[in-house]
Image (tube, rainbow, N blue to C red):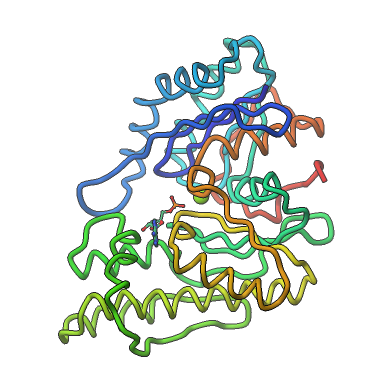
Length: 320
Ligand code: AMP
Ligand code: MG
């Protein structure tokens, strides 16, 4: 039994994994009335809910605390105060139970959870609030093949949604509005394998101020921004010769995004793996699952530190 803790940003989650199965996956998300995440407030949220989320996960899994062999924790990358809150809780539990800690890189966990669905050697298209990256395993490491040059796609969507008077998170509301919209051309910005969203953000805001409807802008945003990501992901598949695509991150909850990925994969004979929503968003289940892989490969520590800026290719991959 490996217990995993997710704490990198807005979500505090606890998962329990055993032999590749996730027995519990409980989480609670820090939300704001308006504006984005305040790191210290989110960390306070994590400290407040930690014990109850932990107890709920133990209860749902039906296991006894003493069966837990290690505590895995997402110590990287993320917001330092949030990471610290999670690590403090992990340390406390590890000490009480006299078991080791396992450090898990959050981005890699999004990819590994796709492997739990049957993908053997996939490309991960990771599209969340703060992160937009295309990651795949090559020459012994998880490498970033492409990424955003400015803001993450989710943050971009949330910013234009806020400008158009929608609340946070903007993604689900943009998806609803898009159903009634028609296409207008927006800046399509992809450089090699990298994407950028700030030009499109400015353009959408200007067009909205000139009276173009939120419906048309939402529709066009989806068609343009998602096409950029699908193009970069397709190029990563072509370049690496891999035939599996895994989706990760909250933006991948979008039905049109999934459809576009599915069409691209279909056209090139690749297989698409889209985890269930509970494993797509930030969650402790994927940390526990990945923690078990690391633990079985002999990775366990008495104490670990947070690594807010760790890059996926800095992680020594001893488990594959
Ligand atoms: P994460 O950081 O992975 O938790 O994802 C959060 C981001 O996903 C936020 O920016 C949301 O606006 C975005 N999001 C959630 N649901 C959707 C959706 N249906 N369509 C587009 N974006 C979404
Ligand atoms: Mg995430």
